[in-house]
Amino acid sequence: MRNLLLFFLLTISSVATAAEVKIERGTTPGGLMTPAWKKAIRDRHEPAAFKALTKQLHPLQPDEIAWYNFVRAQIDEWRSKIPELDAPFAGVAPPKHLVVLLGNAGGDDGFTSGTDTICFDLADWRKNYGEAGTAANADRVRRILSHEYTHLLVARWSAKHPYARNTPYARAVYVLFNEGLGNYYSLTAQWRAKDGVLPDIAQAALTRNGPVLADRMQRLRTARVEEEAELTQGLSRGPFEQKWGAIPIALWLSREQSRNPDALRRFVAAGPAGVPAFIERNLQKTDP
Image (cartoon, rainbow, N blue to C red; front, side, top):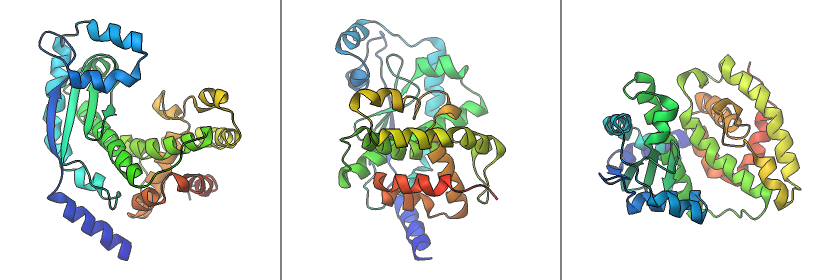
């Protein structure tokens, strides 16, 4: 009861301090990348490739402009969810001023820059999600905003609670913590648990990915650095249902949160160090 009261009070107190959200373009009218967009994508490319990319012109295409306007239209409704997103991160100061930066080259559908910027590559949205304007895509925009905003909160939490990422295993554990939380907010309704029971599509994904997660993490405990890339491939990237690390964590969080509204806060409070026990506990469970 005490934890539930704390969760409620944190949510209420956050309403008045939800971040102001500003939309910024990552390209000039002539198609040049803005300095903010260059900064956002710099570490995603090798230096030579980055330099070549920044010299190219990428004016927004008509369908990218449609996506730009569509994302803008979702911001007010999504902003109302920010207190809910903040609540599990007790003691963490959320961004007061949040930037949603919309470019169209060198990124992917959602990523972050610094401690207060969410980035969308509109070319990626056009390529992967078709035309803007559908109800499904409105929901997708809000889910990916929540996913990326959670990464900003994890970064802020981690600054206060350092976790040494000096081995392949420790780095994988941190990614599971960060991406498990992010992908929890990416889940559509058809993937979410209700009253502690996961739907068939989610349970099938757990049946498929759970053993992979257990095997890879066991092997990562003693892995050499040169083995890391191969062993972590698919952990949090690739087709949604095939993310063998992030998706099980997200689905287990959904199951626990549907039973106990304090589950997310407890997962965050335990930090990356609590992830191995979280995995072990949930691998032993089956839906009733």
